Image (cartoon, rainbow, N blue to C red; front, side, top):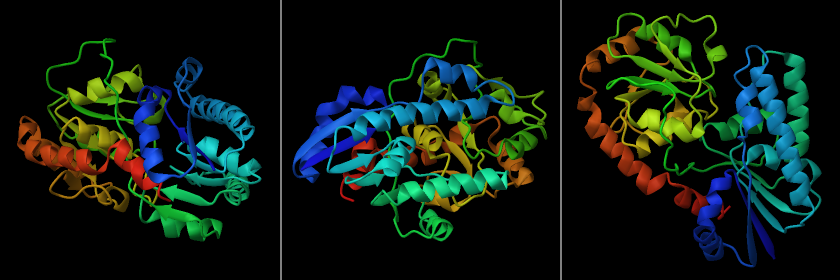
Length: 336
């Protein structure tokens, strides 16, 4: 029996012995690991392009993932546990005999109904070649079962480790600031509108500028030059993370919250089921989705003293260390 684990970061190769030991304790047979990545210089360059940045970024993601899948299919494994969802989609599309467990599945709606329909048909065809599709939000299971008319979805808690961060040195940051960042499923409109009502502590947002089109960012500091390696440095030095997500069933936005938990940074986040799967009121401050006034009131409450949230941040870190690390996740994932 040949087993393959596909990791979604090349840097994980440094911990191969640890991951092989986890595989050996769970799986019988010959165990192997392949490392994939999303980021490269070209992708980082095009994703900041206005209007077409997101489109070009996804095209390059898919091309890179298809190349990985073609090479992996040639190796003929009996069991494949894939943590790179785009690679896994292509593996399912062309799979003939392997048992595939796909992690990190995410299917977002699109404004163009024709494009959405074509993506849906493509995804259904791919999932038919996959044994289990893992999602990271409990509510997603029924949502995807109904959407795709397939009974292959299962929920487990996600987990991820964060590498030592590179120092962010593109510009000098103030001693005190609040932070937000990322791109997937974000509701920056609520955050920026709430902040603009009269907050004092500077707000820094690390994202592509086109994601903020149409919003009044005159009082906001937009960091478009923060990359994956330096994201943790900017987050870790902040007074608090304010994570404003769209109120959807899908579980997008977790990684930034997990990183804040790992760094013991206080968290303000809107109350949606996908977040409740991972944290409680003891660990974060919740606010109602799209409620600008409530978020503003919270920001004003802590404006000059976010230290009052340190008790919650400490409990959040304890939760992360016990339940949400990569090793703990892999133990759950490889048992499927």
